[in-house]
Length: 485
Image 1 (tube, rainbow, N blue to C red):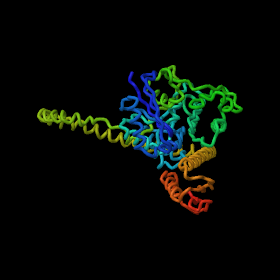
Image 2 (cartoon, rainbow, N blue to C red):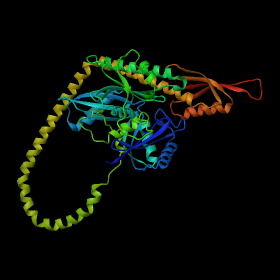
Image 3 (cartoon, rainbow, N blue to C red):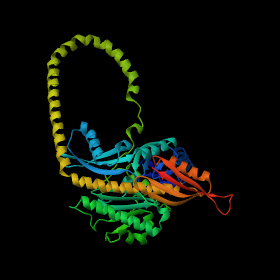
């Protein structure tokens, strides 16, 4: 069985795993300097690609084809249902419905999807809108590292693939990233990815925050599935750092009585291998393995790499052209003697061609009528459930907005140097005001420049910067007030 190499670029580390079938042959990780990757977005593609090259060289891992995963932060996952439509217009129908249900502008996202098993007369589709800037940064960095990217996975989807259960809740965290998924019938019905401000939280506080988010996710699912809500029979599987915090599992479930355990490793590995660290890599590797009837892993195997990034194969025409030319020369000589015969056959076929053209016109008319029926059906569907859709989208927008603001606070804190002391960070709904002190005027201006360079805000305005005398007149400090729009 062919070997598979998987690569996962996190905010704080690069993780590589090489497997042969379900046996792990090699695993390795390398830490990343703070600020090189923020919330899955690679800030310096050149430096990160050099770190990848160094890791592959140091661990003697062949540089070739890889499967990679991007963070699920700021990605939006949905399951949509459409009336049965012809295959030639299915792609357009999916895009139109995605524009309706995705709350963020689609020109900022790539759309990937997978058609699911559906009842007769309808088409169910799993869609994911993932940010263009994050997707592009991961693909370009891997290309710069000299690797050939075959598949781009999304971390929470890879995580879901590791649970060999038809119905389950998964909770996984690593440092400040948390992924929560509800899988029903081997399909992730709800996926949430968020970041936590771990610098200001103790372990107990972090567990409490994750428990709160888990409870919100279950409440969100139950509000949309009142006919079959999640109950205590659905197990909860934990991975990442939570797998090593068994004493805190009862706090994680809070008032829930579901059975909780570690997400088991789907692979066999040697001594010293910690599956909770490489769980996303193993989820990626599973997609390359043949599935059997005994497996109940997630059905979602989306390749999130946009089509124009996918490697182009050798053109069949470029191989066949020389041969075809030789054959044509011989064929022209041979075919000369059959021209009269072909003219006679053409006269016989002409009525048949006219009949086929008439049939084609009729089929086009039928297709036009079918498209009209589809449009009317879609209008009926839109009118049937507008309130539920609006409330669900509003709730999800609130979740997304909260996660964006959390990311802003984290970036403001992480990007300040030892020469800067922060006093307050205030958000008024549209902009953020940051106040603090700097040891030098240059330090304050450099901090403002770093915030601008992060590209998280439309503008960073220095509202004020005042010199404050100290006991040593030669060493004043400077108070500042920034406005982040």
